[in-house]
Length: 490
Image (tube, rainbow, N blue to C red; front, side):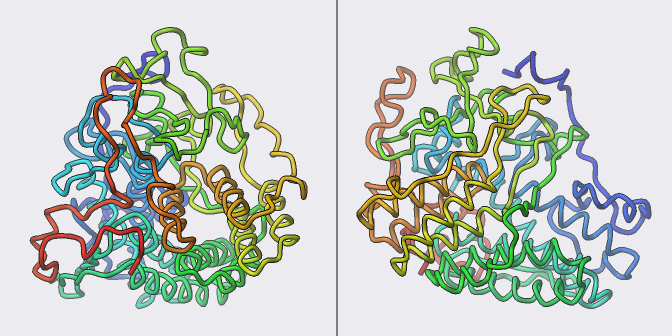
């Protein structure tokens, strides 16, 4: 059910690959950060044999990261296949988006009951592993062939982010296999979230060293790595160290994952699944515990009822029964997906202040984050201006209890970091760092109660994504299951 008003004659799209060795023009256009490698699995070390191949390899790392994190629309064969990135899958698993279609594999994720034979999450897992392996490999080849290039730092930082996302979004026990220099395959052993995060911190530290040495040319990679380190340390419960890691990141910094209309793989997947296909809608108090993203009407997460703008045919989603809401954060094929931003640095500092009882600094940092947060138009027109920043909070807005202040912090994080694959990690942290029971944090109870086509089932117990059954082919992955499915990262 493709939206005829919005698709701009969407026809079959072709996956455009970039040869790592044979296309010299890539070095001049890698700034679009949209290209990908031709191999269906992962770039081979032998494909990056000289310094001249590095720009193309860097473009491959960026392209693989985009698909794994932010998704695409028709990025794999067969043509017009879907690519749900981690940002989309975690939006469904948490309380940001609700499934508005009939595909059981996505309903499983939304209902917190994903099986290990789920083909949708298999593709997302494979894309994420490919992105991790490519970024690791490319950073390593820069180390060997052009060690002072700031692209080395950026690739290393992107690898670090993939380790963070695996720790936040998946159960404990994620293996990280790799291709060795001779082309052979080394199977990885299962790792806990803590192990993955410690690896991420080491990668961010390496990126920070390289980016700092590069001076001005490395400034973007430096801030990217500092924010990634802060996020990893926050997940590890090291609040003061996390605040220190991000202290020098300017509030106006943003690292965007870019999208394009050129190929389906490069399209913004939120736009595709929300506007074009009407398969995902924005949630409102999902499963009792979810935030009221619709009624909050916040400029950081603006929404509107699709039928009010595009007519009665858009009143409901693909299933013809789920009320359809769009977000103007991702309103066309090329809307960028933020990965991290300076406002996140201020939120990390706010959390560190809260954890030592410094309520004054907590309020100041929340307001600095609000003042620098990205906002979006109220309507889907691409030429309409962005909404004003949210008003500052006052002392009266800060609850008197610690529990209330934690609620305020995580609401601010949810709105500032809306649909950027932060929410699942935050919901897990509310459990293993703040001691809350999962049934008080996650969507629970009857699933889509009141929807005549979906009612009658309940939410499951998932607090993360499972590792697909196919990983059982890994001889190091004994048992073919996660080491545990709890919210904790141990």
